[in-house]
Length: 352
Ligand SMILES: C[S@@+](CC[C@H](N)C(=O)[O-])C[C@H]1O[C@@H](n2cnc3c(N)ncnc32)[C@H](O)[C@@H]1O
Image: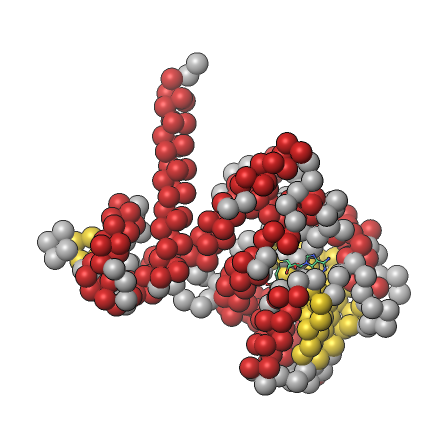
């Protein structure tokens, strides 16, 4: 027994719980607009409460947590609190750099601990239906910001020649499109191209259609559609999936269908989590515990609930390459995106 090691681990567990408690506070700040209000400049608790339209006593207690947690600075003389701009960048705004959006996802997943624990005992999983409609909104508030910041510079312009083809006019499809913000942004930016979004979730498709209508777009459509049984007569120049393969019940069937639905010379961009399939290679990746945990609490269990493959969030590059090849896709290149958590797998239609 190494006493020092035991003490270090005890301290580490304390840090883990403190981080979890602060996650609740980051969520509260996101929901109530306190981060945006704090980013407007130094304030006393009363002024901050007034700015955000909230109860001062609650705001002061919250400030106690986020100040001692190292998120907000406190001046004991003027009794003012400051969210440094370096911290505000990670907790505010409509771009993908706003990581406050992960907090509501984590607190929401906490509601499923009982049912996921039951699946540890009994097998199976917790179905997608149990996560709707909240999960749709949570995905939307995260992915919408990522697309605002990275869709054009982080994904489309990273792929040689793709933007020119979109400007000239091609047909594109996003599978597992969720609320479709990416397709709507692309439809607005490339009016000569046509866009189609597929998802099995009807609530997400309704929101995607509503946004397209509010943007006055006529070159984008959204349909409720299972990726593993796509219609017969499709031929897209571009197919994309954004974090939409690894949680499917039958991801191999979806990849096979994607290859079939590409037009000759068509390109498939699979945007998915950047990790290795081998746990040994993920040790030391600071994001890995988060990814495996989210997988346990959502991505893997929804797939297992449907008697599926249960790949999990961290299915990783080696397995992804194997499955893309099995689907017949060829010339696969793995590119980095501006979003540090994702890789872009650029593939060409195979079997031509
Ligand atoms: C992690 S979310 C990704 C969300 C989406 N790409 C976005 O930008 O918001 C995965 C999506 O895949 C969808 N999905 C899961 N299985 C599917 C299937 N078999 N066919 C079509 N969509 C599926 C889910 O409904 C969900 O919207």
